[in-house]
Picture (tube, rainbow, N blue to C red):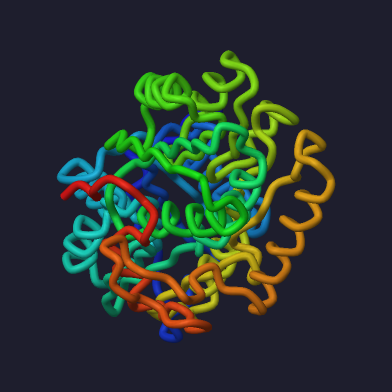
Length: 358
């Protein structure tokens, strides 16, 4: 895919009295990506959503993007350049872009910003995220049901609440069906680094893991598992179906397109307002990829039932009794976790070993 660039266009869109964009001027929408559009995972799905925006609105929009932007000062530079070049709306698609987004938004009050997976808002800044932990619960059930060594490896990116929630949700679901299961978490400290991810997967396999879960963005763990044989994996952020039916037996799919189309439409018609959105399986923002025939039929059927129960609200992945890692009570019998606690989750549940890095 050829990368577009935002460096040339500098015309600023005119704003009508109603707040809508002038009909003859396309809405310019920028996207800041933490990885390459060809990563096969997180950034790939955000870029698919960008293309869906173009397909939906045609010449009423112009989209631009920058890929592989590090989290930090460089992100602020990229966002600033996008705003200066006439962007009306900018999607910043990684947790570490939160403070740069807030800083740039303050300097450009007429530009609207949408930040993925963070928690800060302003008059011209919204945040949005998906309840990935719901998909982790489905994966955890399959993993706990299928492991023969009782050892599950988990490649984690950064110790932020989103990732910690996923580890906890997967472990709770796996240990419920298999009380002997052990999780070994490797912190890669990267979202996308195929070499690091492959090394982490190989190390986990050598330690006896026959299931690999990942919260990193490349397909390298899938390739490592395929080379090892008899190891199952799950697609992360995207279907990664090129590795089906083995080792990839299912996946979490991030479906950003409906949200992006809706928010761009709100800018076009002048109804955009700051908001916080956190959607899951029920709303379609979190999808579960095909569970392949490598998974026994009874496990496939139960995993599908769990997915549907979570989507309908009948089941919550964090339902007590659940203790914290130190044995103290977190949730009583039948009690479900509140969103505030989940959004700030900084602890392991009981049964997980190891410490969460600072």
